Length: 105
Image (cartoon, rainbow, N blue to C red; front, side, top):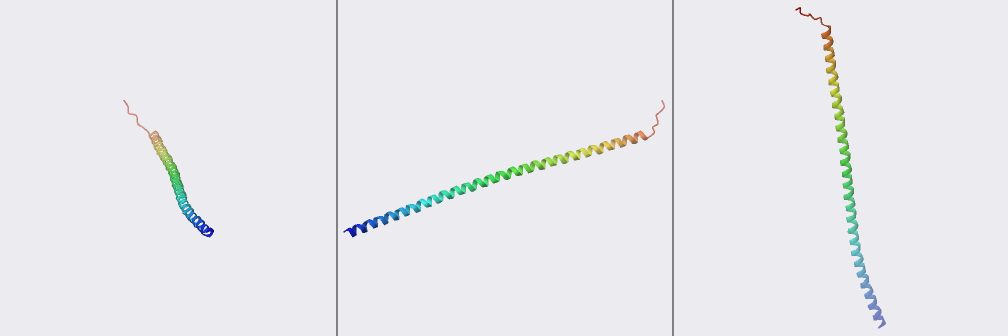
């Protein structure tokens, strides 16, 4: 009888071990899914952050391009004004060098 009792106890222990192993496996799967979801979220956050940084860099580059365009335009306008000034001075010198006949009244 004690042998039978021992056998029953060992069977019930094995059954509880199996259940606990199944429960452990379920818990491990849940934990694995949770970890995977956390890692996916971290990856999404990192990708979003990277995109944000790229946008900021592009914006800075575009503003730098705009600034260089404005400097270029200003230099071009300065050169045009300078050449107009030189033209007017040259014409004034030529006019001053010409002899003029003053009409007699």
